[in-house]
View 1: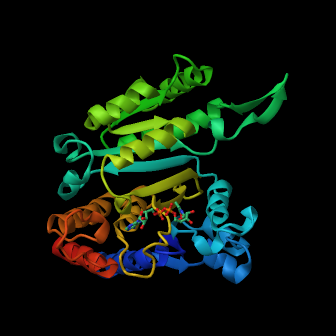
View 2: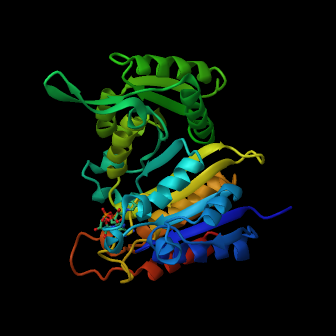
Length: 367
Ligand code: NAD
């Protein structure tokens, strides 16, 4: 049997620094768990522009379409701010998402016990929190036509159109139900069916898809009520599925329940490939953090946890993903902190490499 394949795109700024720690963890799984990946590495973003004059070379794009999963660090930086829009580093990332047709964006909000004090909410509201927001990523009001700023009478009017086809709702709903089956078997769908026709259709299609998943407990909530419930008692949720616009807002809200940007992973999934695995891109939520790049200050956990998501959702290695997440939890429990996780003076922060090494030691201890 061939090894699963992984394309690593470290990108710019702190991307290569945090990815170096993930490489150590990938090596650990090979050496200690007999789980070996065919890993290739390439350029994306500003570094790709420096070498090829484009933020994503066609060969890299083609490779991304072939592999079982892509793991990306971050792109961008002040050096590239004045570039033409068409070759800005972010265009490389957008091209990957578009051409791989990654319609389902997974954003977990997970609160590690040792970081519960970091949230702006009360500790008992967030301690042990583990929810997942599935956001539709390729349609809805950010893409619908007509759009633009038009003249109407003697004034201008700005127009965007919320538009969803049944098949677009169906496929993201299925991806959320599949996810719920791998988790707590509870799915809450959020829209505004009270005031939007697209919301009525959304609710009907999700309900219909739900008949194929009798084990999953399905509920519906208006998105505004959902925002309130997320801040009141987020632990009532397991998986939430919602459209592009509401998902944009609700996933940022849910992510911040748990503290630092340096801890937040994400995944974007597309349609299943011939081998049954979905096309997949895993990446930390944070950017290239030019303010701390090259200083060994970056927290590698978001990137490490993105790899844990790849283990679970691309490679069906849920137990190993849990092992890795628990190793991160153990390290935090031992008080190891990169600078972004410290809000008191007098404690020396761990460097990026020290944090990665601590996770490796916790993995060793898990055997
Ligand atoms: P950012 O996420 O890079 O940084 C925001 C703040 O969080 C900074 O103070 C940074 O030091 C801190 N931070 C981020 N990640 C951290 C980590 N792992 N450990 C410790 N601290 C961390 O966002 P920004 O400053 O708005 O953007 C910087 C660059 O990144 C821009 O060029 C932007 O376009 C790009 N960007 C890229 C992505 C991506 O690649 N997906 C996402 C957002 C921003």
